[in-house]
Image (cartoon, rainbow, N blue to C red; front, side, top):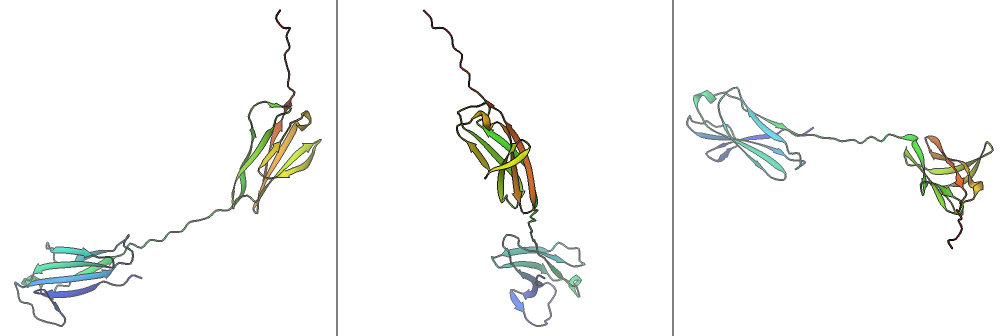
Length: 200
């Protein structure tokens, strides 16, 4: 717990180290000090007593200490009065939670988008949200109802696409908490050329 503040008494700018009488009309200063452990969150000092009077307070702050001086002129009303200095420390503690989960929101994109034409190249990209991050992606191809593994990795690139590459491709995203699948249908189109007679 934070340490209690320290209170000292000054009479005519001299610290009072032992009990002494203070005459009415004398100037008295009560000094309260406390250590500063975090300059970004310094403590605050508050004076209180049962006298509802307007007391002059001045505060000083260094890198390691906060000081509050309470200055007043002694009257007979101050006899037996207890002055209390309260130090309030701004204690803060932070914790960051980490939630682990299996892959979710798994999706596949096709690049370039649009028509997939024979002889071109196409890339199927798989992405997923998981924590901890995914261990691996695995691609499968549906061949007459059987899922045959094609390759591992987030991207599946097919160069020199043929009609036989048409079909449904599955991506499996996996981490230590589970797996999730998604698929895309690759429809390869044959290139067609339109011929017309040359102009005479």
